[in-house]
Every structure is written in structure tokens, then in C-alpha cells.
Length: 315
Image (cartoon, rainbow, N blue to C red; front, side, top):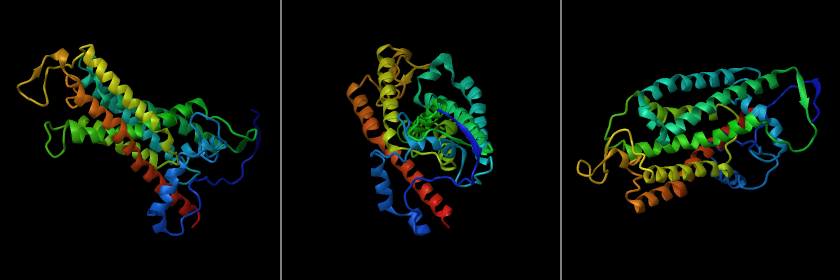
């Protein structure tokens, strides 16, 4: 793939999303346009980036990661923000692990596994954004042989992690505040880190996404579904192998009476394989219903962001 250096023309970020909205109301609230965009996610479209395949749009990865609809295309604000996000996550990781490591039981929980993946994502997002800014700010234009191309490996990994961490952090937040520790009848009062890993992390993931021009494609929801299926399988292995938890626990259906020994404790009381039927139904509802539902509001946020971006570029 040959590269030639030519003077760079004036750059204007490309924004997928069709024709510009006719008004600001159309940009923020047009269900018909949003539905068409949703259905279009499952069609072959060479104008959209592809995670695993080749696409002509993959050549625009630097604009997706390195520009923002909120800031000047020539500034580095998106890079600075991602640096702050990465420092926030990495700075909270050591004390969180030190407090909850509990002889390695830290790694059995969905919350903590998702939190660790977010560390990797924000670190890679900062690196990829730096590479994107270097590419965009260079005073030369990189031209490649016309035709579809693949994303660089580090961009592919980062984009894949974004498709996982954003809905997974929403999933963890929803399940924690409705199933594990219902907000209307909390059985425990979370500490500082409890709020960080069960809500604040999702806010950061959503801000990171909305302040960039990155794409969230519904066709890749299988990534989060596979993650949920793998964790469900792990929860069964955890039960079958009698891994248990750091401390003994109560049977959630009979608290104070059905005390499990440490090696019999389920990871989460709502996913108790001592009651295989209930655990299977809960797992199926999460995988089939809740995981796809977590993708819809994120996609709607993306659609609104794109429409507003189009409107701003055509004012």
C-alpha cells in the first residue's frame, strides 16, 4: 500500500447520517429518521466503517477518533479529555483492587471484569486518539490505493472494546441498582467505589462516546451478547467447581436461614445455580432482552449527535 505526501487541503469532518436535518427540532426529534438509521445498521453499506472487514470508510478512522463535534477540528481538546478519562480510571484501579482483592475473588465479579476492560479501553483510546491527531495535524495528506481497506490492529481492538464497554457498563449499572442492590430498597449502602463502578464509569463511557465522532454499530451487539453468555457460563463453572466467595453468604430467598458455606456461595444471589431453573431463566432474560435493550438508547444518542453535527456543519 503506497503512500505519497502532498499538501493537505482544508479538512472538514465527514459525518455519516444522510442529508442534514431541516431544523433543530428535526435534528433532536425525528423518530422516522432514527428508525431508518436503525434498520440501515443491518444492511451492507460501504460508506460505514467495518470492524473486521474491508471498507472504504475505514480510511477515515482518524476523523472518527481524533475529532469532536464539540471542539475545533484543529485543536487537541478531544485528546486532552481522553487523557483525563484514562488517568481517572487508571488512578482508581490500584486502590479499588487493594480494597476488594480478597485473595483473588476480585476477579469473579462481572462488575470488576467490566471495570478492568474499561481500563484497557480508555488507555487504548488515548493512544489511538494521539495517533489520529498526529495524522490529522501533519502537514501532509496520506493517500492510499483507492478501494476498501482494513482498520489498523490497535484501532480495531479499541473500537471493539468501545462496542463492549459502553453497553456492558450500562448493563452492570442497571442490574446492580435493580437486582443486586435495588435503589428503592437498598440492602447495603455503597461506598465511594461502589458508585464509581456502578454508574460513574458508564457516565464517563457515554461522555467519551458523545464527545467524539466514533460510531456505535448495532450489528456488533453480538460482542456484548457473547460477553454475557461467557459470563453466564463462568458463573455455572464457578458453581460446579465450588469456587465460592470470600465470605459465607445467605440464600437470597431465605435470608438468615439458608446460610451457604463459603465454597457454596454463588457470585450473585440473583444468579444462584443451586436453583438451576431460576438461574437459567435469569440468564436468558439478560442475554435475549436486557443486553439488546442496552444498545438502543446508546444508538439513539449517537443518531442525535450525528444529526446535530450535520446541522452544525450546514448552518
